[in-house]
Amino acid sequence: MIAWKYIDKNAATIAAIRDYNNMSVIINNTPDAVKEIYENMTALRTANITEQPRVINPQAGESRLVEQIDKIDLLNERYHAAVEYMSWFRPAWEVLTEKEKYILQEFYMIGTFRDGARNRLAEEFNYAERHIDRLRSKALQRLKILLFG
Image (cartoon, rainbow, N blue to C red; front, side, top):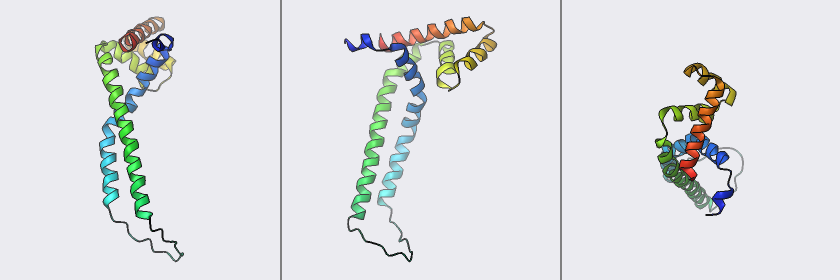
């Protein structure tokens, strides 16, 4: 496909690494969120007793159900996108060595600044910061090839 030739694969790889935790959260939490919405759809609402006059909307129940169905549809779309992402990303991620995964996690998944990750890893592995940069670059390059060819 011609489009792959022109995509910034480094930026796309970094974005994919950064999305991993969010996609995991979506996959783990969506079934419970959908279940909660279904429960709210079938729960009876209590009357809100106030002295304010109310305009009764005869379609209020229908509107509430439609709103809940829309929420479920949105959650399901996000869930399916997350599952598709994981089926694309995880096989490539699993090919990496533990050290490569650890370095990429420190740089891109934890949400820390690059210099902070570089300093921590240099101290932990007892390497120079330039060597850590080479390891990060090599791991990122390998993951990029695994993801995009």
